[in-house]
Structure formats: structure tokens, C-alpha cells
Image (cartoon, rainbow, N blue to C red; front, side, top):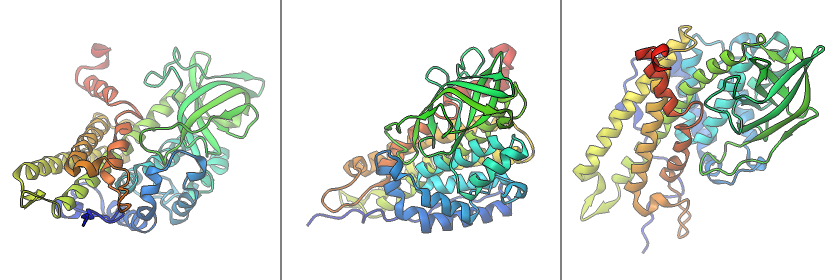
Amino acid sequence: MTEKILSKREMPERLMSKIYHDMIMPEETQKIRMEVREFVNKEVIPIAHELGARTEDKKHFPYELIEKMGKSGILGIPFSKEVGGRGLEYPVCGTIVAMEELAYASNSLAAIYDVQCMLCGNGLTYGSDYIKDRYLKPLIKGEKIGSFATTEPDASTDLSVRTVTTTAEKVGDKWIINGRKRFISNSPVASYVALLCRTGETITEFVVDLDAPGVTVGEPDKKIGNKGQLTADIYFDDVEVGDENRLGDVGKGLRIALATLTFGRIGIASTGVGMAQSALDEVVDYFKHREAFGKKLGQFQYWQFKIVDWMTAIENARNLTYKAARRRDEGLEFPEPESAMAKFYATQIAGDIARDAVQAFGGYGFLNELAADGSTYKVAEIYRDSKIAEIYEGTNEIQKVIIARQVFGKEFTG
């Protein structure tokens, strides 16, 4: 008889409560965690495999789930009451633990949340009351999907005037936008985009409706992971927007984008923690049941020591991430070096642990689905999803450059 290793996506015991003692996050944040975890257990876990396994297509986007997140108040965690948010004392901390809980179940959903709230949503907070009423409040309610565009075919890490080719030219009381953006998350299903443009010799942010004349959104990219997170190119051909759609002052767009991406990279660090914790939990559960040479796999000292290394790495990554979040909540727009350290370290250990987790599962770890019984193995999904976390919202190499500048000074490092 063929042994059935796991039923179709049964969730293992969550080990965080046993092995992590939170001395950093305030009580408010810990309550947010449990609220989001309850939502994830009820609404996300039953469909998490489908979110991560189906081919990228607009018809697969979880609209209903985003609406539920809006109605439950999860989309409002980062925001003030004035715009329809929760008005938390520690909104960054709340957002970070929400991201961690979402990524534990589905990094695709965490990435959607990141763009909706931490990138597009945060960018919109720099806008006028008109922008907050028209664009931000519907986003927080889950009625509209937002996107955030900085990257271009030939500009991503370097967002300077010399590389950004998407332009906004002032003509009368209007701005005329031309150019192209790439890898824009949520764009195939979004209603609008917070957009970085070159305005002469400066950089400025705008919000642009994606159904405006002259805007074309491409088909979703086909990726190796994060399949539930849709990305595509956006083309702008003489797109006309009013000055009321400008985010912040002319020439201040790069600072807005960088501050927003710094917020986002703390979120990406938390997804690394969530994915790493999920991989650890999956492996520990498997090791309690799978046998080789008359012993449970978890009884082999080699794997025990591996688990200890993973636990220690996750502890360090979580603490770094939470510290960066606390510093941001204290009013530091750029909480360095912690945010950069958290981003590169947490996402790196997520990839390392996921790779070893696939090895631990053997052939089962290499499967999307076992044909014999329809069972699935989450470590394969984590392995695919974890790689993008080392790349987007500032590559890990760039994070190391940021940290080095803290040590030597920008004048020295260049």
C-alpha cells in the first residue's frame, strides 16, 4: 500500500508560540497578530494552495478575499482614522505582523497586501484631501485595487533623473505623461497607479487612473513563484492628468518613493520571516512522522542541528524586523541600518531554509501535487516564492550598500 505522507495541505502545528518570546512588539500589535491569524486560518489557508499554484490570470485574482480584508479592517491597519484606517498607535508594527501572518499562509497574498497598503496606499497618504477621498479611502475598504510603479525596463535599482524615462510635462494646468513601467504588481487588476515620473530635472509622483485614455496595461507576466501576485507592464501615451493628481510637491517624488519603499522593505523582511517559519513548521511536522532506517527523521542529530540553526536564524530575523518597525513607528522615515539589515537577512534565510526544506522532504519536496493521492507540499511553494523577496523592493545587494554607507559614510562609499 502506498503511504500517504500528508493529506491535501494539512497545516502543521505553529511553533512560533513555543519558541519565540516577544519582548519587542506592544500589546496592541500582539492583538493585531491574533486577529489577522484568525482571519488567515479561516479565509486564506483553505485557498492558499490555489493562490500559489494557478497560472497568472486576472480571473484568478482573489477579489473576494481583498473585499473581506477591507471589511474586516485588515487593509486599514497602516492608516489613520481620518482616512478610514484603524488609527493604531503603532501602525507600522501592526502592518508588519499582518504581513508575516499572511506570508506564513501565502506569500502571494502578502505581496498583494504589500502593494495595496504599504506601497500604493502609503504613497497616497502624501496626496491632497482630494486624493485621499477619491483613491485612498476606497483602497482601504477593499473596493479598489491599487498599484505602485517605479521600475522601468531599464531602471529599477537606480531611480535617478538620468535613468527614469517616464516623463510628465506640464502643459497649462495639465500634466502629459509618456513612458513605460515594468513588473508593476496588481496592475492587471488595479484601478489606478501611484507613478514615479521625471519632471524636467526632477522626479515627481502622480496617481493615474488605469482606465484613462492613453493608458494600456499588458498581460500578466508568467513567473516562477508568487503566482497569485499579478505583475505587468503599463504603457503611457500622452496621458493627461490634472495637477490635483500630483502626490506631494513637484520634485519631491523620489523622496516619497524611497520613504515608501523603505516601509515596504520592512514588510518584505516580515514575509521572509513568515515564509521561513512556515518552512520550519512543515519540516518539523514531517520529521515527526517520516521514518528512515528504523528512526524518525527528527531523531537524526544532523537534522536536529539543522532545525536549531533555522530557529536561531528566524529569531534573529524576526527581532531585526520588529526593531525596524518600532523605529519607523517612532517617526523615523528611514530607520537604518535596521530596515536594510532586516530585509536582506530575513529574505536570505527564507531562501536558505526553503531550499533545505525541499531537500528534507526529498522527492515530495519537488512536487506541486502528487498524482497518486492529490497531496501537495508547501515547501515547494515557499522555495519558489522566497526568491523574489531577495530581489524586489531593493535587491539584497543594495541593502548591503545602504548598510555600508552607515559604516563608512556616503562620501566614502560613493
